[in-house]
Structures are given as structure tokens and as C-alpha cells.
Length: 126
Image (cartoon, rainbow, N blue to C red; front, side, top):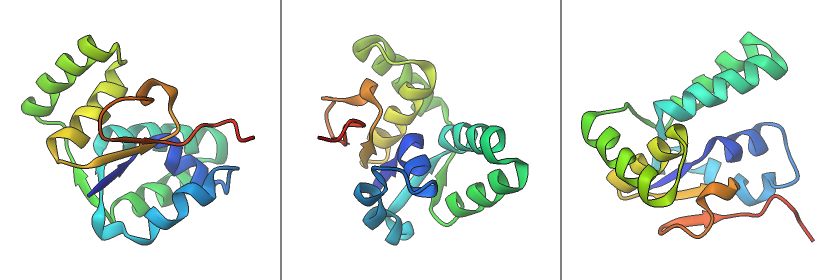
């Protein structure tokens, strides 16, 4: 199983410079998990940049994967990861969800660089 962080969704949806790094993952929605916190971040960003209709369409795509709601177990793990790795609330929830579901986290977010079970693609190419 894999969890693609919000930045990966944005790269893929906008055909960003790293979209090729993420493209193959999006061919396998059945292997993906999506925390509700990623849905929150994605909806917020897409609605701001492209409007509500596009944001709703983006969330519909996330629904093709297994959506993982925030549970007490994930929240408590996130608190521990936040303290250990100095992650923000949202990043800690995303990381804890990946760990709780035994999934790899795929991201270009610098906050996750070097953490266990993270595949990191640098935003700067070259």
C-alpha cells in the first residue's frame, strides 16, 4: 500500500515538473490509501487555485482509493511522531496514517525527507 502526500496529488493533477515521478502510482488506486487530512489539504488548495468544482472533482478521485479517517490510535501516534520528528499537525497525521496502515509515504514535502518508509522526490530538479 502507498500513501501519496498532498504535494504529490498536486503535482499529478497540475502536470507539475514532478508529475512523472508520481504518475505510475496513480495507475494503482486500489493500492492507495488517502487520509482525510490529505483530502482536506487537497480540497483547500484546489478550491483556492482552481475553484470549488475542480476541488470536488479532485476529491472524487481520492475516493477511488481507500480513505482512512482520523482515529484515536492514529491521532496518538501522530502526536508521538510530531514530537519525535518535529512535524506539523497535518504532516504528523499523514505520516502516522501511513505507518498505521503499513504503507509507504510518497512525497516531495521536505518535512518528510529522511524519515523511515518515505520515498522522497526533491522539488528542485537538476
